Image (cartoon, rainbow, N blue to C red):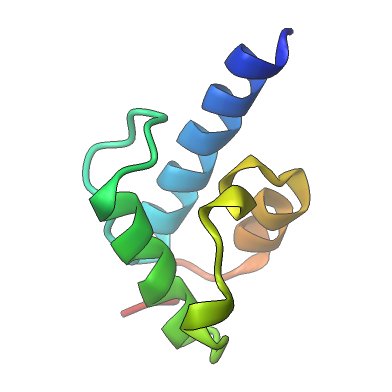
Length: 77
């Protein structure tokens, strides 16, 4: 799968995982917009990660997706 398709698919999966964790990103569409960024910040806060160090490039990171999958449902609630 070309990077564009693969990256959009991974972004979509990360959005789904963030929603599962309670870090609301809205409807998962594979597009990293304002809601996705807010969801990522909510995850960072729940994970006690310094928010300003976050970069939306993590959405293209397979390791980050696997890390999210390890977290329990409602992690951000």
